[in-house]
Figure 1 (spheres, one colour):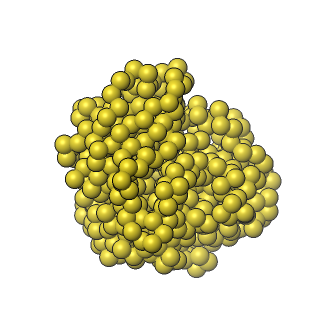
Figure 2 (cartoon, rainbow, N blue to C red):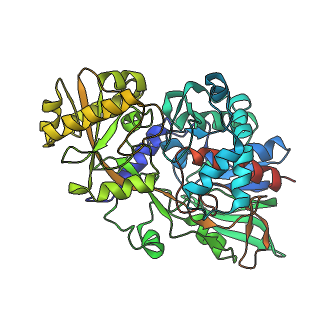
Length: 488
């Protein structure tokens, strides 16, 4: 863990994920200078998945809506994510005969966050995740692939996968729907202050390259500004361990702005010290490694420099991350074979990342296990024994070392692959306190009139640790609730 992800690099990445260069706008997204209208029913702050979902829902309920986004491109962390979505009882589970339920999902979320989450919010998440996925599929026209992923901490495979295993698919389809509904989306427009009138939030002050502007919101404002994973000082304020030594997967826009604005109006916060790291990230930039999703397909193992497994590969992210930091060099080495590469489809889905990792010598493809191990200085004999033991576990149907969940698949013939990675800050579980209607609450537990929130800006939904693929369910479920409530 050597340096912080350079903001300019991260911005270029965000723009690339959103489908435009630094000189282009995303879709029909406008800058403030081109727009005269400032009076709306609803103002949404943040054009990521939660914000666009809230905006669309409000517009479908008849409200006039503007979305203000401080970055040059829309998408936020949703666009940078794999976009996978946990949905209990989904159509693929039914097709494959996987038994699941909202109660089972509820228990997984609660257990995954050490039972520190708000049970009422988790209940809403669990009960509405499937309908939210169906809304994305049927109303927003998100293209989900005919496969699922098994994220750590879930008791069954339930995570849907969007086209190309990318959140870009979700953002692009949300933006198309927003355009269809006539929603105004303004980039390079940074919200700076929430406006109150007669103890109700009635607008938003914002700055642009052309000056300041105030948007009025006759019905209310939705905060969807994301978390604070890219704000090192804020991270250290709430959790000193999450300092500049730890890289981040987050959008450079994840700086906690919405939390700070809400606090100035007396909003309460919760779980701010709970900051999650993703266990298998780029050792130079800190970014997510989608080639590493072979692990989520259940087709790889994690070993250390000594060639030994040290954790269950489908454990919770925080558990794996902590285990990685305790290994030699603070890194892990992911091993898989050619059959696993083909079955997971990660090389086909992410060819540019694959080639970059090979070029940067963070990933090796070799004909033999000895050759692959030698590339990273891993104990080859120990690694071969580890693989032999794992293959026996697969034959017997039970992992005697770590009780790995899911179906165990033995490794076969080469070529073989090994990828080095390390943990990076990925999600901040803390944020403003909301109720089941997505209303922001003050320190006395009372709703702040006219102010709603959805997505990573909120706290209380994931407890100490968020399970993989729960974020897309979270932003969609509570984005829809916020959009519905604010438009009433």
